Image (cartoon, rainbow, N blue to C red; front, side):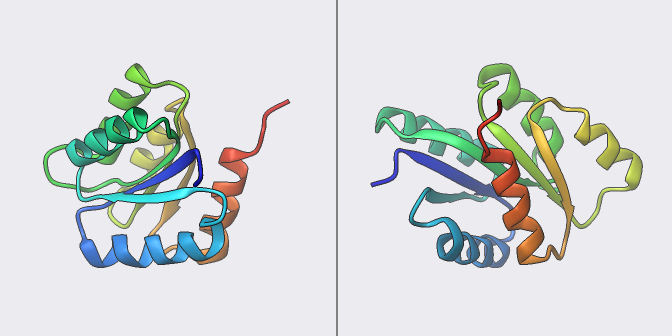
Length: 132
C-alpha cells in the first residue's frame, strides 16, 4: 500500500469520479487517491490518513465550492500543514483570482476546467517532484 496520498476536492461528484479514475490510471501504483466533496470532508480525510500513517502529498481542489472557496481552503490548509502541495482547478475564477491563488505558497499549479489529462498529469508530476 502507498504511504502517500493525493486528495481530490470538488462539490460535483461526477467530476470527482472522473478525476479519481484518471489519477488511479496514471498514479495509482504510486499514490493512494482519495476524494472529498468539500473542504470539511477533505480535512477529515487528511486526519484519517494521518492516523493510518499515510502522508497527504497533494490536494487538488476546485475553486468554486459551497461553504469555502478552494483558494481559502488552501490558505487554511497551508497554515496547518505547510508540507502539503496543492493544485487549484477552476471553471469560474477570473484571471485576477487565479493570479492571487498562484501567490499561495503551496499552490504549484492552477488549471482551468475542463482540464486536459496530460496537463493535470504534468502539474502533478511537477508538484511532487523532489526539490533540489
